[in-house]
Amino acid sequence: MKQQIIKLSMFAAGLWLLAACSNDSNSTADNDKQRPVQGLVFSMSEAPYNDDVDIATRTAAPSVIKDTLNMGDVAAEITLERDNTPVKQTATRAITSGNHYTIVAFNAGTAQQAGEVKGYFDASGVFQYETGGNTLELPAGNYDFVCYTHQYATRSGNIVNVDLANAGRAFVCRKTNVTVVNAKHQEIAFAMKHAGVRVRTKLLAFTAPTGVVGTLGYGAGKVAAAAAYDMVTGTFTASSVKNTAAKTQAQSYDVAGTVHDAVLNDDLATVTGGSYLDVLPGTKPEDLVYNITAGTVYNATLNTNGNRAPKVGAAFAANGAYTLTIKLMPRYLYLFEDGLTGHLGDPGRANHVPIAIVYDGTGRRAIALWEANGGAKTLWCPVRPSYVKTPDNDVLIGVHDTFLPAADKGKHWTWDASGSANGTIKADQPTAYPAFYYAGNFYNSTDLTSHLNGKPLVANLDKREVWYLPAAYDWKEIFMKLGFATQDQVRFYWKKNMIDYAFTVAGGTKMGFARYHSSTEVMDGNHVISIASSSNVARTVFTYKNISTSASAYVRPVVNY
Image (tube, rainbow, N blue to C red; front, side, top):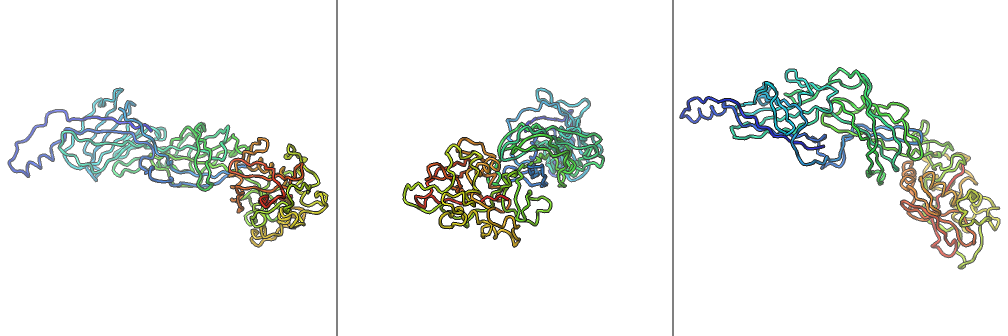
């Protein structure tokens, strides 16, 4: 908001005839109080929105409302709050807008008008009296002053009325109990504040939404058509008469940025509507409507399916700037303890326990919310003499074929005897193949059952040959579909905090910055694929499977439900 300032000097016109002076000092003082002050100087500045709120020292603006909305595969958390970004001021300059001002003086603490003056400022910033206007002459004393832009308001008695069409243009300021003295030049400063309120929208997400088409507005008969400002009390009252015409303000979302989310401990991308909607004080959040008809985030389409009214909240205050913030989160699909899938918050899911996140709906596969083996590392197979090349899987995968569908054999290598070179079932071998054992038997371990809140695990999940050690192919699918990764050969540039959010919001544990086992064994029979996880990239690592305990890694099971 640009800081603007004007100076005007209103000196009394005409000659003041002095009565004969008395030698009595008390009489002289009394006469001075009655003598009009001839040197009042008024300064004016247009204050930014939210100027009456201590923005710079607070960490967050007070929330007005908070609500949620599901948009298919995207969940929206909606808050409406007063803006908390301090407004940077520019160098002051003379007002040349042509606004017309009325300054009214009241005897302090009363509704009795003591004087009034009207004027405007020309292109040079010089005050010009309106035709037929008077100067303001006041005896010394205490006064309440009110200044308002009268071309955007109408006065009736001590009430100044602002209509909806002028919500973004009208200004008003009130200064109370000002002592006027017989000084040569006494300055009275007005910080003119907006009579109206402005509201915009902002979208937040892990990745910047693109192609968003949205609006903010109000319907006919929904918002106050006028607001009345009481010059004596300094308060606004919204009219009971409602607007006759609807209004829609397009939100261009052309202002990009980032904001830190303390809950997620991550920086979210933001796109903010470049245009505000102007309304009057007393308007309530539920009087407005927002609408998103197009856009993409997380490979999902954004659409509110019509106008949506914010949740009921406190009325907007004059000179306030507010933002309707829509935080867009991926709406992950979960597998629950009863064998059904659904989103958190879906009807009928409140009394059920999520146990895994679905990453392959067609193939019915999901990754567990918790790690196996109590969250401790384990070996892929026992330590053997150095560089003994003994294959353990029936199929050894070429280093360039790791992520091909033909390498999608995690369940086979875990549970089929034919999946082992020695003809054993690895999931039954806690000593020979501990990683496979902990993954395959996850269903009856406390790693899972301790989280079920006493509920039984459905029979088709509480059995053998369902849970397994994921292949490298599974990990690729997890990175791409849950972490929205882009692949660069063996590296996956993912949004780890998105997956961490998906785990933790459902009561699970994050993936650590560590290595995780896969069931994939590569061509030389001496290496396996493990997954190294970091904040923004996950990569496959060729690891000696058997030469030392340094080959230990974590186990995160997957389930074929």
